[in-house]
Length: 497
Ligand SMILES: [Zn+2]
Image 1 (cartoon, rainbow, N blue to C red):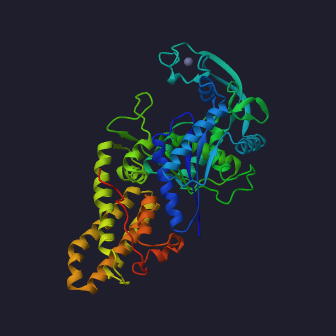
Image 2 (cartoon, protein in one colour):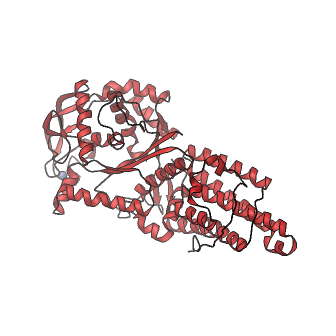
């Protein structure tokens, strides 16, 4: 048994859970479920990022304490993940006292190693925003929100020696000591590391009151991005000692949208190198999608609530449609119309129809085991392609294997016309129905990571105990070993829309 540790980013608690969050999280959940299915020991971590000035301000506006505000908003994420059947093992919140304590220990360690030092931060500060802006962020030299001229401020702060890690990061990424995928994203990071000199970064703020105090100097708080990254360690029970790492460390896959890749591919591994902690095995940055050709953004007001889409297509439907629509890692466009089409073709007419067709044919029949050579060969190929696709995070390819198996089975029904066989050849009828039921069992397995509820419905219609799933996966993948004794009907899996 091998271990598999997967993370999503922790999501900013001021945001409402949207389709973009759901995309990353569903993808991670499919991988977590797939690895559990094949018998790996899995840890799946997600959570919320809960510090910083903007959070304090939003809380103030709402007449709440920052902690109350975080509690309420973080719970919204948990609710959405529950309704989408996200099977995380821990939901980490950066306001957890245990996270806070361990972050302080880690920072202390870096101070002792002389990788954090005291300096001066100089920047353009908007007094009303209580925030620094880079010259690029200003509009005609003015604060983009208040249209006021920012003041030049100098404050004491602490710096992390990021510059010391440029060479080693380049080498590690180049030699695949740190795998970044897809290839284009890796090349972007390499290009950046080759062309720009890494500067040391300020990792504390003097004026932010909602954050983790810097251990040596409590008038400073640790910059939220820096402490947030450590969630990947604290979320699996790290206590702050680099020599004592949790059993799941390092992450096998860290999944994220491409906009936060640079931070995860440069600052995060540099912090780990500084702490002398092994690096994650793979960082994977997926693309963005537009919705009906439009970018989704708060300012355009077209942020989509994943629960609203799940109410239309079911939770399984949403999970499937998100991953079937766009090759993972690339940008793409989705829309309600495309979702309707795909739902009707793949799920209502495809999978749903096949399941109800077969269950009807098998109703009240006594079926004995039969091993169809063609099907034995076919499922071997399907499983091998499917597993290869999921190991490569090519969800859309795994899905097309499922679809190709559904077509194969439908074609078999059309050729055999089993409804005629009851009168002409009862033996052949038995063999055909057994083969069809066994095909449904394989489908229930194949769809399990993507559509866990539907998978369970099929298993239970086939009279297969859930314990079947704890069986050795290599056994379950064989064709023609299982007996079907109690077939029941199920209500339409995906009613046509
Ligand atoms: Zn301002």
